[in-house]
Image 1 (cartoon, rainbow, N blue to C red):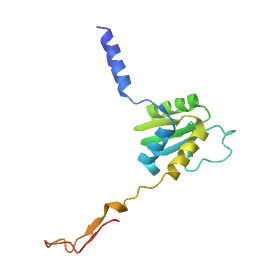
Image 2: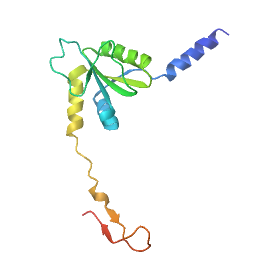
Image 3: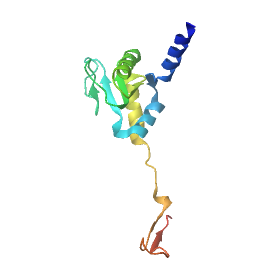
Image 4: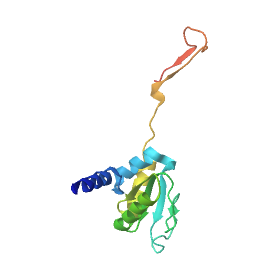
Length: 145
């Protein structure tokens, strides 16, 4: 009977998301999926932070993350993972990822995301209706060439 609480605790712990390392592909997917709502935390030491990371909040002990997805850039992956786990436990509704490889990896993923071609939607065409209250043929149909 003592094993029942252990099993329940194990199931509960596996159901909770855990902070994870994000490689280049995962970081690009996060940028695509969350865009400007993706929170970026700069957890590098002052010695390593020679220039500010655009759009990032500098992490300190009192830094709170808002609900949503957080991407953490640190000096070392293990240090950044510890910060990510702290944020997930302390702040409600936070899912934390760590840029595996630090600043260089994050910048490579950001550059790949920004230089990706924009999807061309002009080939889909669209219809301008003559009048939305009357039945009949549309006034004009645009078709891509």
